[in-house]
Image (cartoon, rainbow, N blue to C red; front, side):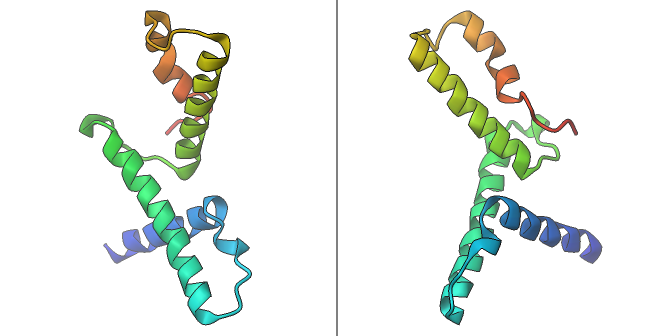
Length: 109
C-alpha cells in the first residue's frame, strides 16, 4: 500500500510542476512558498476530483492531467466554433460527435 501511495504522491508533484506552475514560484518568504506549494497541489487535486466525479462510475479509469487539459481545450474550441459559425449547439449531428471531439488528442489508456 505504501508503495502505491508513493507513486500517487510523485504523480501529484509531477502534474503540479507541469500543469499548475509549481516550479514557477519566485517568492522569497517561507509563508509565501508554502502558500504557492499548497495552492498548486490543491489545484491539481481538485481538477482530478472534478474530472473523476464528472464521469459515470463505469467510465472511471486511469487518466492524466494531460487528458483533462486536452478535453477542456477541446470543449472551449468546440464552443467557439459553434458560436462563431452560428451552429445550433443542440443539433443532433453535433451531439452525436461531441464526445469524440472532446477526446480528440487524449492519450489512450
